[in-house]
Amino acid sequence: AMEALEPVNMLAIDEYDEVADELAELETRRDTLVEERDGIEERIERYESQKRSTFMESFEAIDAQFRDIFDRLSDGTGELHLEDETDPFEGGLTMKARPGDKPVQRLDAMSGGEKSLTALAFVFAIQRHDPAPFYALDEVDAFLDAENAERVGEMVDDLAGDAQFVVVSHRSALLERSERAIG
Image (cartoon, rainbow, N blue to C red; front, side, top):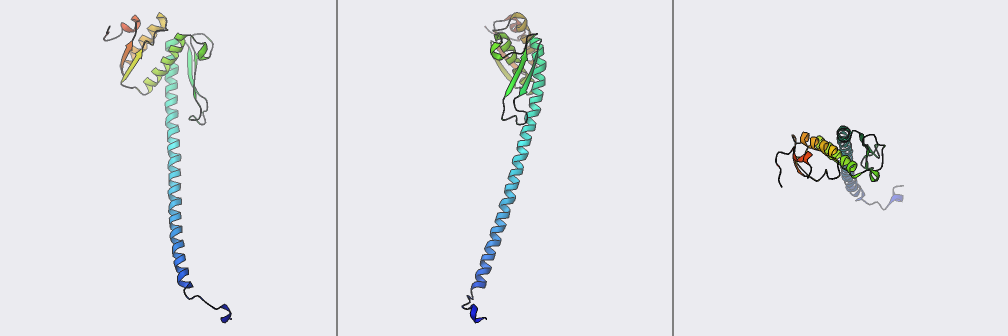
């Protein structure tokens, strides 16, 4: 029976051991790669979760400030709305603004002053959340009537404690509040 198995390769045992060693090394390297991949995927998930959490905290804080400031500037109601709350990075941001007692309308249908107040409320809401040291506003009151220019002046005056404002304006509502007027 042994003769029927011949010819026997006597180096087969050594070759088997070499292949087994190579296989063990490849399996170890594969396990290391799988472990590293899992670690990277875990970190990516953690960063994505942290990014979303940080964004939502900032969004909610800015929305609360926007509601307050918009009410103060326009005697109306305004809010920020995410188009896709489940994945806020895939959708956009909508500002719902209702100045005074007017109905909610598209931005295109708003007057220049209403658009200005809405934009300023958003900028000031961001400023309250995460103040920058310096702001430059160029004739932001150009489309505003005297009453609304006065409100914007009060708001800039209130926020000037946290940041420096350089405002280009022809309105006395802002000029009278300034520490220094040039021109």
